[in-house]
Length: 445
Image (tube, rainbow, N blue to C red):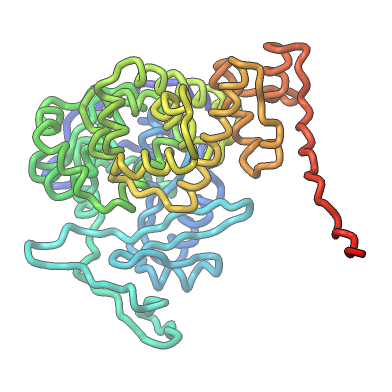
């Protein structure tokens, strides 16, 4: 399947009614089991054999309908978390308030299996399961120390699960057993019209979870869809609420932008005025300084192109690339300790998305070396002793991308850039002269 193809999905004759979902059976849609991860099919088949209902759900169904190869496959079922864990030895339960099962496979692959959920009634709160290491299985699986039973008020039917999701195009189910698409919310119609629509009243849903503002923009940007009119009209009045979300949650969402196709999403987030509520002063400067933001978008576009060709990036590399156009002016006339200067600048920016301290330290070290490299390409003076630093290799790759607009080839590095700019210069680190220490004075006569 061509990942970049955009096969128009089938248009439903009518939206789902109150009497049941709209169903598209085998032959009425383009999805084939051949395009689904075999491990996903194994999970669904085993749950089905054990008497449970299990569907493929969300972005994978959407992408398959569009002729794109999904990057992730999620499964939803009526089996409870404890029941899932009992049936898959490679399953681990995660989550504090809503338990999910992560089924682990070789090479680090993880498939998420969730239980059908429903929205809680006003005044209801989900149980906090954070103090329990395991959740009990209704069929008798024992917990190691403290047994916490799963609360049925958080679970629901497939229809209830569909209506609690963010957007209609991400609430489609696919039954791999019968090859049937199941649509409770009008997602097929919005797919055909290339619209991203919030499920329910946009103002209420965005207030309930402001991260939905971000997700709507992301889906539209990456798919090339429009945002449905009433959904789009609600964004300006609710975008400020994004900044009030948990910093760790904003960081998780930001990671999705950096690890996926970044350029279109950041461009859209800037257009809707969201970046300042995610990245503090850094985001505000991106939105108000067009030259800086243009450089950011160009670098992200180069990163996206490299990733599409199979290049991988570390988190330090991704965030260093994002922040470089913002910190670059600090290297124009370096004064004092650049580590302290960058640390103070990042702290003063007050980014709402909370980057781990270890990651921040790695980013700062990488940016310092990039600063030295870009200055060396102008002046011909390079501190080659930096080659001993742990982040030298990452900085070399990024400086090549910054200078050439592409990642270095197999045998290319910053050294090639420097040799091209200053053919006669030495690239060997200077040896420090040892200071002569006077020996002991001879004893006086």
